[in-house]
Image 1: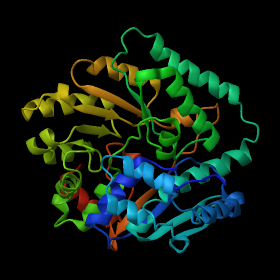
Image 2: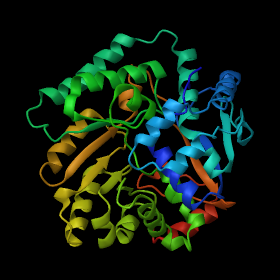
Image 3: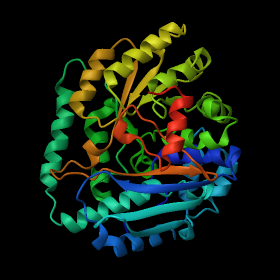
Image 4: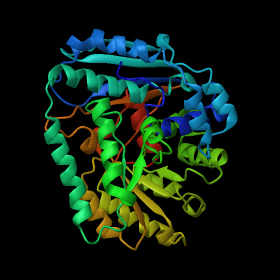
Length: 389
């Protein structure tokens, strides 16, 4: 089977899940899958995808895995107790044909606490099933050559002491085996420049740091769970701070666009959170505006971390390192360009939350193609409330 452990997912799923357990245990949600790559025919592999998901739903956490999670400083004992009883409920996921020829439909409906771990392994399953059927003889040597070239660009540069790269590519990886090799190579050759991986299983197996804080779904769900829509971003950040008391302090900045984020990310949050993560829009503009915002709020940006994670390549990450060197700390989460760069076009697939407690939720990105909502009226209302163009 493709997924052999429930740890084979991104850390931020566990950090968000703990918040759900403690603050929103009754929340009901819906997720929907979408393929943004045109002309992809996944319909012939539906049965294979269903079999892999059935196997995923039979997995349980082992004692060794629970001990590892419990060793992370921000994971609490009652959450480990819950995970000891946890499994993904097969009755909550629906896989079938899509509306257009070749498309597939994947919908997840149920308690947020019990369905939050579906997204990452399901996307990894879809990717690997697709590529093992359409690229039966992958050019591994080409992939290794590309990976070595990326690492060499950084290692040979004289001004990359502040460069820090993390691997963020679980959901769009070519295969589990290639993902494992990439992480091993990064650890072996990049040394201190390799910050860690978002994948908890690979962090455990390779003795590297698991990385991640919050994802878009957390701030989206707070649109339905907070006191009122306009305050939902503030509510999300305050609830996060209440749970982690200053730990896991990287705030996601693009659920409503940067203008709305900066309006809500006041001096209190500037000082409380360790930094912010960029995931859409021009990264240079975003970085400059974040630094200006810190200065305006009497916060020294040299003590703050800017995490860049939007469709990064190594040359772009190196440019960003040079731009912000000495002005703040920087780190780069690179996904597809690391785990699915063997010379084949990767799939642009996502599975996003679209409803919480029966109410539509939305992400209004600085990159218009990343905006996702199934209710145009709600999206228009959200734009009006947050003063978005």
